[in-house]
Amino acid sequence: MSERRVAEVTAAFRELYGSGPDGVWAAPGRVNLIGEHTDYNDGFVMPLALPHTALAAVARRDDGILRLHSGDVEGGVVELRAERLEPGGGGGWAAYPAGVVWALRDAGHTVTGADVHIRSTVPTGAGLSSSAALEVVTALACNDLFGLDLRPWQLARLSQRAENVFVGVPCGIMDQTAAACCTAGHALHLDTRDLAQRQVPFDLAAEGLRLLVVDTRVKHELGEGAYARRRAGCEEGARALGVQALRDVALEQLDEALAALEDPAVRRYVRHVVTENARVEQVIGLLDRGETRAIGPVLTAGHASLRDDFEVSCAELDLVVESANASGALGARMTGGGFGGSAIVLVEEARAEGVAKSVTEAFAEAGHRAPRVFTAVPSAGARRLA
Image 1: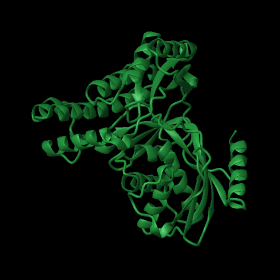
Image 2: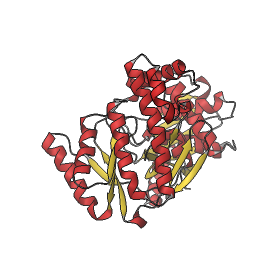
Image 3: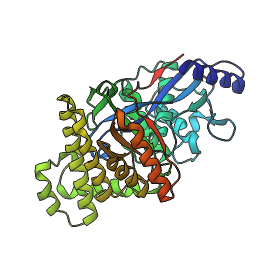
Image 4: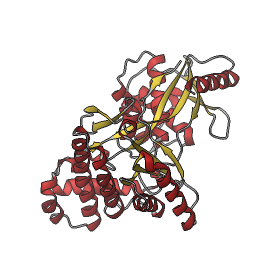
């Protein structure tokens, strides 16, 4: 499959630009097993990379011209000047790879232009980090072509800066780090404060389990402000509690911390972040003991917190969780930023098809568009393919 896709993007690149690329790179989308809205609070997360990837065929240029094309979006080649890239200039999908070039140059790295053609199988608007895949694949290609010698975690940091400053979305570091650093067969336990990483074995098939991703097909736009309001509320809570970030509030201190906060919305946000960090540590402990099935209720508890305290769920996501658990799943929760997107469902292999059918039928009965259901296979992070 990857060989065919490499051949396709290479041929399309040649047709667009008149010569072949210098290489082809890939970066994956991700699902987050546990640890939601904790990354911009210096907390813990646990994503895994999907087999769905953004592929970029890229050729180096030395004349300052940056030409960008997506085979997934209507429109022709977007041509820009590398030295004229500035935050806030708009640009739709092209802002993500252009922002990476800006971030690299702004950090003092020599990037003198490129021809880029991208094709992605990461679903957009599904909360599976399609934008981070675009950013990281561009960063890795530039790293290789311009000999920048940056480590994967550094590429993730620069990609996050591109999204925060150039695109204007105040995302945390999780998505880009997952795209850059995940390994096949593992979930990534990431401390977002110091970027300490641990690859945790996560071979569900060997245990007779499956992790389903249910894309509700409800699109969300994180740049629209609901995300930013919650991030601001978390920062307000940290200031009021006199800590650097909510990561510094221990679970045992939670009741005391909540009593010190006046704003009810801020109280809810703080409660979610503190308990969600504890859930990440709980899942790690269960996996280390080989008790994979026992993480199911922790996932469901995480969804209740995201729904009730952080208020980022929606009717479709709640329906996935309710119908999946009612039909025999071990646990389920929304994943990603929320307001639509996807949910994950942990289920016994033998019950996976039945649970997926029950969720799909529940959507039909509720009058929702049919969801897209697929299996999450822990896959490799960003890499060069050709």
